[in-house]
Image (cartoon, rainbow, N blue to C red; front, side, top):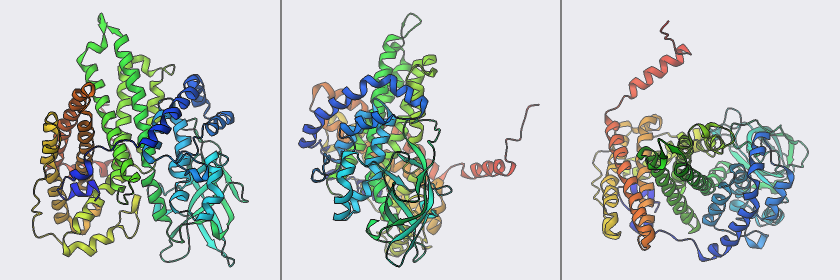
Amino acid sequence: MSIVKALFAGRIPTESLLPYPPLRDQDRESLGPMLDAIDQFLAPKQADFKRWDREGAQPAEFIQGLRDLGLFGLIIPEEYGGLGLSNAAYARVLSQTSRHDSSVSLTIGAHSSIGMKGLLLFGTADQKTKYLPRLASGELIAAFCLTEAGAGSDAASIRTRAEKNPDGSWTLTGEKIWITNGGIADLYTVFARTPGEAGKITAFLVEAGWTGVSHGPHEDKMGIRASSTTTVNFDRVRVPPENVLDTEGKGFKVAMAILNNGRTGLGGGAVGGMKALIALATAQANERQQFGRPIAEFDLVREKIAQMMVDCFAAESVVWMVAHAIDSGSDDYSTEAAISKIYASEAMQRTAYEALQIAGGSGFMRDYPYEQAVRDSRILTIFEGTNEVLRLYVALSGLKDLGRSYAELRSALDDIFNNPIKGFGVLGDYAEKRLTQATGIGRDRISAEVPASLREPSEILEKYTPELAKAADYVLRRHGKAVVERQFELKRVADLAIDLFVGACVLSRAAALQADPRTASPAASIARLFAQRAKRRMAETIRRITRNEDDAVRAVAAFALEEGRYPWDVF
């Protein structure tokens, strides 16, 4: 069972959490020399990365170097010429590349995590034979074409169309925007509306060299500037019938599976970025003198470093727990994957902000790496699903599963995800019924399964897991079908689930580290820090489910939107 959905039901699935999953032996054997080779290739290029960021491009010879390292074939099976890495090992590779430069990770990740992931998940034998060997070598670079003007998170509103021809081929017309690798890709996974019931969406494999395919100029971005981002245009492109991915009308399912399956790459990259920033920040704190002593001696600086360590440990713990779920063959990990993206992206932004703050005025200068880290990290909460939409997805996924235990809501809750709307299929024609009885959920115990040094964080997990179930039950009973539109309440439920799931992953990993005398004490301290801070957040979140300022927020926002400005002035 999904760990998060178990938490929504008030249950701590100890059997899924403990012990913390180790990296597979075969991955360890592959990763050692690979990580060394990555460092040898990227480490001497720090000045180049800074220059390419300002110029907004990666040169062709550098892309060739990535090909030569095999970085475009990381997750492609060995039978097709790839390295056949697991999701966990792949995330670890992107963690390593991100220590050097985020744009490098994005070029690799957009190819593997989403660009050709649909082919891996849904491709036919013929499609895989035709494309995967060339994708593995980097002869072909892949890109994922979903986003359109006016249809960002609202993936169901895309307007690119594909009309079926008498010979079974398709004519594809439309424009996609903000496509990573758009200017260098040779193969696009494209999503278009096709004729049929309610205008279904279909996924296509489209070659860049076909007549009618073109891309726009390189976008001038705030961050990740060296990676290629362009529009991609399709002007009456003929797509052969054998290039439909999966089956006609199933494109939305394909897109969501790709995004869910690829989130460990983004999370791994965020972890690598945090590790690089922690190394910079600790060196800066030890070396920079203020008031006659290193700033590392000041508690307010140490507080920042401690929070950076907690954030990195937590993000790493949750990302690799999700990667293990995928590698183990689970088919119910989308909620966990969404949480890993939310947490890792926000943790990376906090870490970049605090590392720059520790650097002081130097951090604001372009000669130092901090300002670029802040710019590069800003995209993380936006792409591959905005964190706002993903929070709604987390909440509604948990509510849907919880509601299924009540016979009177079963069919209504099943309808929530039948038709996609804003974001990731969270729509509903939700039956207007109310629950008539309390959950009656007891409290699971995990404290007996972990070392005594982790009793405090384990007891917090035990205490607040039933509180999530009660909060979810309350929201369902109070709002009925209107719950889909109650975004403040959904965000609170999601935040509870995020703190509990991430906290459970932290606890599991800290428990595994108690066997090592060198890491036992700091790992336990991190688990306690995370749990105590999560406890305070969760207590406040629970209080605000019934006592909040939501109406005042709506009123102030309505006033500002009506005025179109801030209307006051002291003059």
